[in-house]
Image (cartoon, rainbow, N blue to C red; front, top):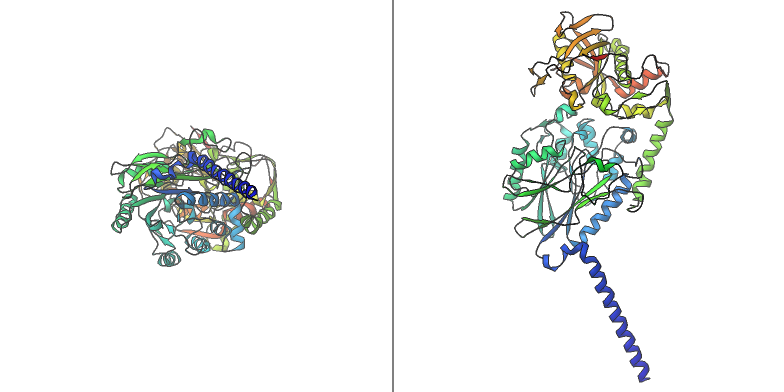
Length: 598
């Protein structure tokens, strides 16, 4: 009996020894990747910053990568992992939704929008207001924000340089704390201040209506930083949507007290040499992750961002001392692709898949099966073409504006338009639509924004030239203001002077690129750069441009919005006067010579 007891004791001893050995090996295995969490750094505050931007309603994966259901799954996994070793926060740096086929499902169903519901599943601490968040106007943005419901505390939407007092619903959300210039997040007893900023170009590129934008971004952000630090907040993160990381690189040297920056709006891809990227993205890498620049204090600050559409999640691992000074960046800092294939498969969040994406897919299937016509020719909507040269798809869209304006003129008691202008930035499919069936979904792909067909009345001919000069002033930048035209032809000379405008749309440098303009009935409007005297011109366009978007110098000219979206106008034009046939005779590849160059 004694021998049996001793044997059992030895067995237990061996079991304990093996268990201890297994535990030691586990710690050793964890040590290389999580060494920064070990005792030698235990006095440092580890903060993991998870970030993304420009989701832009790309809820469904177009290929093996992306998809908001996988993105939610990955973000939650990263959130739990970061919380094991320290504190973590998560931010979105703007453009949280965007017009297009996916978002049309939300508009059809009504709030809470599918985008709002999906984002409610993320552990986000703050959203930044981007320009596309205002594309449908302040009321739809208010619907969107109200639909983001993450208890116990709903995350705020941030921007320090927006005055919302002229918009009652947004002002009410600000009063409730759902919109704010900044927020403070507490983790492990440490306070982290997050300050938001939105591009000063907002009125020119979106539809904020009565929202007033302060273009002194540096001054107003610094004031917010100063207020936070005066309250004892010693870790400051500036999260912005300034349309590109270069704008953040210009802003940072003007700011004191900033520890981290997150950019948005530019879709720049930051990645390291060993980062696993989506195939094809290797040539698009902007810089390493993170990049660094000095703030106004001469302190080196890391700046991060990702490309959008829920295809990457950024993770910046940081360490701060007791005084809130950034000590170092952890080696685990990098972006992670959202993948459905080996070696880094991310599963789906089934709630998002079943409760949200299935409904979006059903809506898109309805759009995709509604054939409204047939094209005999490939239609070119490639971004680099639609913003620089005449294309047959651009001509089709310009003609649809001219037709719809003419069709509804009598009903609204206005003169029919003489010409039409469609800005290339409002045409978004960025592809060549092959000849064959044209569906309602195709028209949404081409024209996704909430832009309405509009007629601007009796524009003086001198001002028409200024408008056309604006349309061709930044061709070299592949800028969205470039116009696809209907009802006239024009000749341009890119060696001429590019027009420049002030912030009020007044011409400060006269352009000389537009050499001729002739209406389709043969009436000359511009000859060898000189305007021919005569009656004003009625212009069919979209309300975004009529209100001064893309810096079109209409300068408060009278206009009438006709209550039909430009997407609806295009669909009606194809199924109506074209009788469902886009012919190669009417819309040949390469266009008809409406815009030529000297």
